[in-house]
Length: 132
Image (cartoon, rainbow, N blue to C red; front, side, top):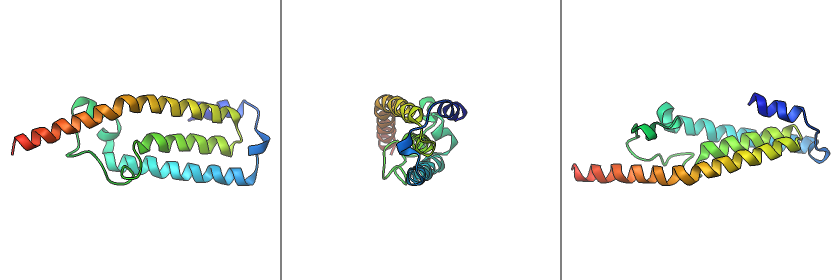
């Protein structure tokens, strides 16, 4: 995001990360994160991405295809990988710290969202079995 980039550019750089190898590692993280975020959006669709399940707009079943078959919450962790890659590419200690904050917030979100999602799809499956 723009503010994340501004925060990094207004802070000192970390010499040990200011290398071509670190920059390339950051690009790899950014690429992997983008694949996770974009494939998550593709699998979930618009309403699945933007909390449609909180308003009763559910998929037929919980999504278990790529990238959800390799990682829980791939959109969160892909986004975190994007921030981490960006921070490494900019050799930014501030960016690394902010990435840690993002990861903590996403972790806290999953503590609420995981049980909620499991329960709503359990209920939906139960209702589907009863209506047969």
